[in-house]
Image (tube, rainbow, N blue to C red; front, side, top):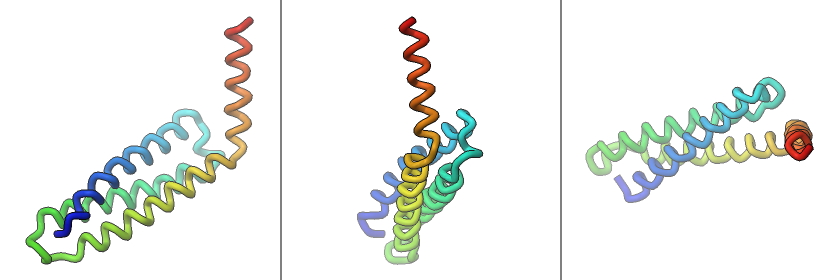
Length: 112
C-alpha cells in the first residue's frame, strides 16, 4: 500500500456521490430521457464505485501484496473523464434553454 490509496478512496467516494446526485437530478426532473448525460454519469459512478472497492482492498491487503492501487487509479481517472464528459453533454444540451425559460417564468410569476 502506498500513501495515495487513501486519497483515491476519499476522492472516488466523493465523486461517486456527485455522480449519483447528477443522475438523480436528471431522473427527478424528467430530463434523463432527453440527454446522454445520465448514462455517462452511470459509467462514471460505476468506475468510482469499483475504484473505491479496489482502494479499500488495497488498504486491507498486506504491504505490496496486490496490484489493486494501480487498477483503482486507472478506474478513478476513467470515472473522472466520464464525469467531465457528462457535465459537458449536460451543459451543451437543449436542457439549458428549457431551464432558463423555466426560471424566467418563475421570476415573472413571483413578480406579478
